[in-house]
Length: 57
View: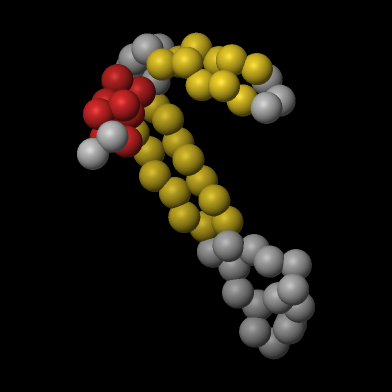
């Protein structure tokens, strides 16, 4: 189990068998060329019980 501290929801307790998913987008408000629209998503997923070991490597 881990405890994440979030700005909106406060502290959130996550059980060991839960899947943590982190997603980020590459969008930028300055990319306004309609002929060359670029957008991307990237992310990763990890089982909660492995999170601390992986993040510290």
